[in-house]
Image (tube, rainbow, N blue to C red; front, side):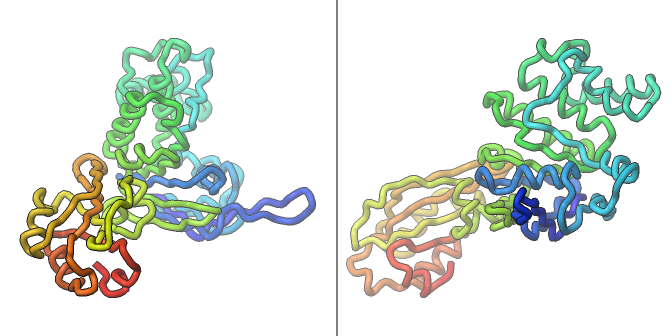
Length: 342
């Protein structure tokens, strides 16, 4: 487990003034869990990555791995404890004059591990990343995805408890990206890892993350479990994960609602609503996404057709929606949302 508590980072400008890049960041990633940190360019993701790996020391706050605070350590103590965090970089950062096996062995050789133990660990890691037959290949003989897998194996060489992936799939083709994501999921379970995935790719988040933290201007503006965010109609991250692009083509006879639903909702929910409310339910647009390995979540824009919206009983509609597991945000007028929270 890694816990980031009230972390802040400031830099001093040449004129002596300071600029705050990270402000009071708190984040917990349990064992066997993957948390994605997302945000626009300049949000502070790269600085957060450097602080987590202790390449940059936080100005304030703590970084705890399995309860041990690494942020106050220095010298040999810091070098020793920092082994608990393995880092995968955007580029594999392999040494091109060394083979895949030799690249993986580098951290072990640096620590003076005996050769027989190095050979055993390298073989184990090559098997873990499905490159047992590529140990003697040089980086130039490997594809981009294979190079990144070697980088992952090297990050695991010292038995870390935390794996920090800093834009590790950026620049890879879709097939290689999927291979890397499946590998990270497998390694999470196999080695009981806490994985922090820093990325700007929402497809990556959809496929692998258990939780998300959205950072903007150095502040976490939204965080939570993926399932909770995508089922929350007010979540901006949920909207990005399940985007809904539709035209606002409806007239004043339609009560329009954006519905959010999970895979526990019956597939014929629109017919059920139509029968229960005795109105026509028009589907104006919809999208459904697989989140993680098993769960499905969707958003739909629907129009309930009424002769007179002034006499619509919102409470009756809200109850009908709740009974079949639908969350709604009414779009016609903010007054609808004030009258009921579904």
